Image (cartoon, rainbow, N blue to C red; front, side):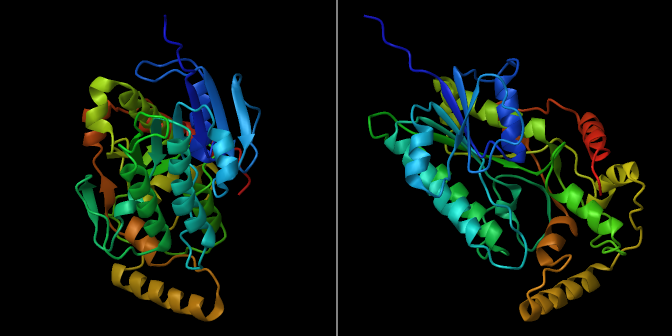
Length: 354
């Protein structure tokens, strides 16, 4: 008697977000060599999908901080891509980053175990190794910092530990959960809600008359499609018994070999709107002194400063990585060159009202 084949359903948690939405779009698009194919695609998010759903995609509104909602959304899943995350790097406290990044990830793992979901790809961050010293061409051998510099860093570390720590755990109905984590460097592309638009608006408003950090400081960037590509390669490796043992339980930095100075990275996007980015810089020691003063003002007034030490550690000194492990073990190579990614992003920035 022939064994009944299990439906291959992919579930994208955080499918309404920047990277998640692009993952949904590419999953629903034409197949590409090396990517897994699925019979069904489900996007799960507490926010509505921000545009028309691609053909063949089902939307489920659910909150990963509510286990019952999450389990209903993951029922029948074969592979889960967990991209839901709260990015909060301000000085003010945010309960949401623990609720989503830590407890939400634990809920995802527990749902996978209970529902016999065998594959989980977790979206981590380069920030899990962010510390006080510069990083130039770092790799996965860098340990987590013993004293994370920010709660966001701490919650991403804890989330990654939960996801990778679940690798090899037994599923309720038999079988094993296999997990892997992708650590993107700074992701950019059309619909980027983070650094590009925020920085350009602050510069245009005159809030940044001097640049911060060293002119030689390099900062990793990666186009959104390349990040999606890495997620799908990781899933394909987990599916393949011959490659699974090398990939399961491991994390991978993913970039595109493009690590400019942050403000040089912004210049082509600023030029689209005629925004002049300053050339003069605050000396590093003075920038750190002002960052400490900004933190003091925040403690007294509650106001969020333009920058604090977190920003200086990321863009004020070297903070870039090697993706050699991803290339060797996942077969990763960028599918969109940085020159093309920047042109696509410039076309989108041109449509924005800054």
